[in-house]
Amino acid sequence: MVKDILKSAEDRMKRAVEVVREELVKVRTGKATTALLDGIKVEYYGSVVPLRQVANLSTPDVHTITVQPWEKNMLVTIDKAILNANLGLNPVNDGAILRVPIPPLNEERRRELVKLVKKFGEEGKIAIRNVRRDAIEHLKKAEKEEHFSEDERKRGEQESQKLTDKYIKEIDNLLALKEKEIMEV
Image (cartoon, rainbow, N blue to C red):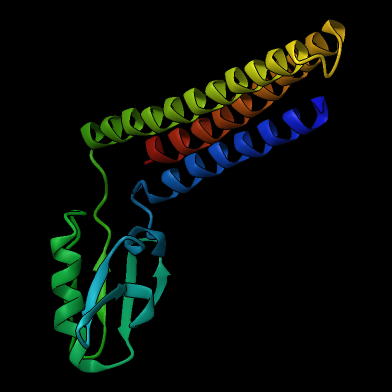
């Protein structure tokens, strides 16, 4: 019973770390990555689909993303979708592919991005703490229903705290790496 509660808590904590990791990938660092365009959707024959389903995305160098649509008539639609996404990116249409130059970040923008990254990290930590709280409540409830002893509950609470510390440290490491990446000129 205790193991089940802790296993469930650990799975939810891992998911919280993954959500933070996914959010951090989307934060622009001045280096080109196709993940920057992941949220962009385009209209394709009457339905709205992710950009990846209508074009090949690649990064020929650290300051450029290329978008090569499967069909040439999609160039204008994709161009508009990237501009409308408000990412601060201006695609260049050369008739066959779109080149999306990634502008270098200024100091003020870097500081804003670090604040944003810290906000994502804090949200992840809050989620992890909420999972710990839920796990402890489950342990207390199970103890009251006499599924196990007070000692087992206390051990379970200690384990849940260890898991919390482990995953919060993991988020701190992700944040430190991303912050370093952003501040790197």
